Image (cartoon, rainbow, N blue to C red):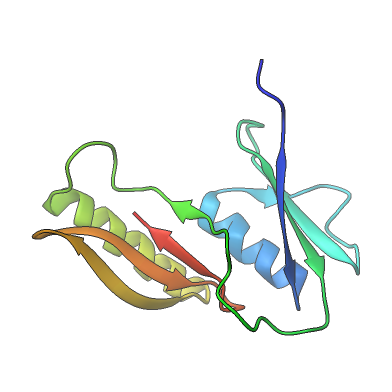
Length: 127
């Protein structure tokens, strides 16, 4: 049996990041941990994926993050026009939530993934 786990990060505004990632992933704010001045947490409403915590720190991000989440909407197997449409649609929705699109990376002629930043500048990919 697999062990339940949580991934945690730091943020200047933990609630803002928690709200962004909850919307991006279809998660919800963790009940009982959504009014904490020291952090915020989100959980999968179906209890399948890991919880994600955001702890408050006063200092800004100064370097590339060493670990990031990827949002997988392209599907398994080779990339095609339909997978590119799904990636671009998700990326546009994330921009509406406060993300910034950095670039599109290609695997040969097909779109491989889209590099983005969350509202605090943390890199992630939509693939």
